[in-house]
Length: 243
Image (cartoon, rainbow, N blue to C red):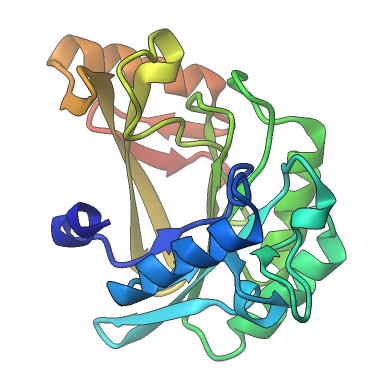
């Protein structure tokens, strides 16, 4: 955690399908260590209020808020309750949209992280396509997904950027093939216009390693084939074709 903090990360997402592998005590222990480093966290909490409260930061005079939901978990008992530690429930779409609306009220931008989809698949499934319009209409300004362990494609819905899965990031070197393909997503906010770009990396020798020019070209061309209504240029800029 200290290394992550020292690297320059500003917030951590602790909501996923392993959050309670060591039970409620394990989650509370994780939160205590995160809090000692003054790390804002999303995706889970000491109780429901904690789990569904967005964390915020101000950048260049604009208030950014971050929320995270878990739409894949081993047991629905993992969901946070009034007096129970747990994750933010992503299965209840009405709850998701209600929370987004509430948390967006005093924010310039609201970024949604969601743990969803199918492992080792490079495309979103039908329910994800149904979630996107609802989350955007509720006030999401960007949606970023995780869980599949593979990169998935990009699209814009009503000019809101969607990254369905960023794959693995820092992972042991036993990953290979598509599981080792990763990268850094950049979101650029200019008024109501939010653009995204993607810089490919690869996991080698337990490290997030830069790719060479040929690998980058191949990675971006592959992402183009699995994305929807976007143009990805050779620098990684992702343009909306629906405009």
